[in-house]
Length: 181
Image (cartoon, rainbow, N blue to C red; front, side, top):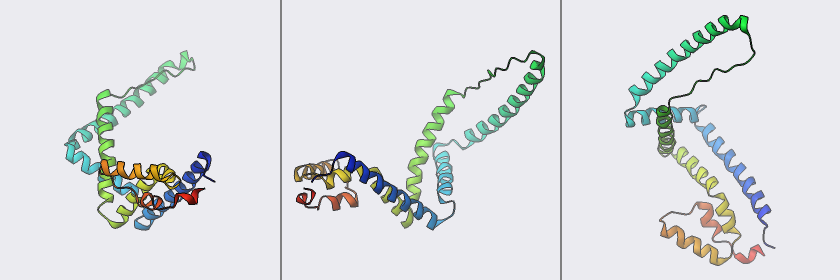
C-alpha cells in the first residue's frame, strides 16, 4: 500500500530530526564553539570583501554613543516626568533604513561565506552534505515513493539544470516501485 501524504510528512519529520542531530554532533566533534567561530570568521571575511570594516566600526561606535544618550535622555525624562506620571511608555527608536539594507546584504553574504568556510574541511563538507539532505528531504521521500515516470522526470530535470541529486535521492531512485504497493 502506498504511503499517504501524512505518513510521508511523518517520515520527513523523523529523518529531518536525525539529520539535525548528526549536524549538531558533527559541529560538537570539531570544536566547542564551531558555529560561533565560523559565523565570526564569515562576518570578518564579508566585511573585508565588501569594504565595510570602517563603516561598521564607525556605526557601532555611534550606536554605543546613541545608546548612552538614550539612557541619559530616558533618565532625564523619567526624573522630569515623575510629577506628571501617566503610566504610558511612548519612546520608540527607529533604525536607519540604509543600515538595515547594509545589514541584510552582510547577513546574506555571511551565510554564503559560512558555507565556503565549512567547505574548507572534511568535517565541514560533511555538515554541508547533511544540511543539503535536510533541505531536499521532501523531494527525496516523494522520489522514494513515486512511480518510475516521476523518477525519470526528476533525473532528466536535475540533468537539465546541471544539479546533482543528493546521496539519498540517488539511492531513492534505485528502489523498486513495486515495493511501495
